[in-house]
Amino acid sequence: MADKSAGRSVIKGMGLPLMGNDIDTDRIIPARFMKCVTFDGLGAYAFFDERYDVNGDQKDHIMNDERYAEGSILLVNKNFGCGSSREHAPQALYHWGIRGFVGESFAEIFAGNCNSLGLPAVRVSREAIGKLMEICMANPSPVLTIDLKEGYVSAEGTAFPASLPEGYRRALIEGTWDVTQTLLEGSGEVDRKYRELPYLRGFT
Image (cartoon, rainbow, N blue to C red):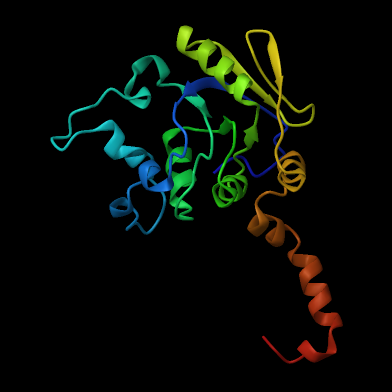
C-alpha cells in the first residue's frame, strides 16, 4: 500500500502512456487471476491478456517496453476502469508499480477504489492528456508531477489544470484515505464513546 503515515499532496514519477478509451477492469485484470487470498503478486497479471499471447510470449504493449519499466504514473484516455467494480484492478496496477493516474475521465467506482489505496486518479482535458502522452512517447524519461494542492499536472516545464472530487483530494492530502487506518488510530475515542452510550453497556 501507499505510505499511511502522511498525506500525499505531490506525486512524481515517470509517465506510462496507455492509449484507448473505455479500457475496462476485465482487461486490467482478467477474472481468472482474481482467485487470490491476498493481493500480493497480483501485479504480474496486470493487463495479462494484452501483454502475452497464448504461448506466454510478450506482445507489443507499453508495459512490456523496457524504456517504461520504471513508469509509475499511468496516462489514460476516457472512461478508464469501466466495467465490473473489482478492486483487484487498481490493486494489480499498484502492485505492478503504479502510484497515480492521469486521464480524461475514470469510471466512478474505479476512481473510488484507487483513492482507498492512496492512488490519485486526476482528470485533465482531452488536449492535456494528448500532450502529456505525446511528451512521454517522444522521450520516456521526463518526470511528471501531480500536485493535488495546486491542482495541476506538469511535464517538461508545462503545467495542465487537473482535478479530482474534493472529498478524494482532501483525503489524500490529509492522509485520511485509508479509512481502516483512520479508525484504528481513533480507537481510543471509539472506546470512550462506547463507554458513554448506556445501551451498549454489557456488550463485548
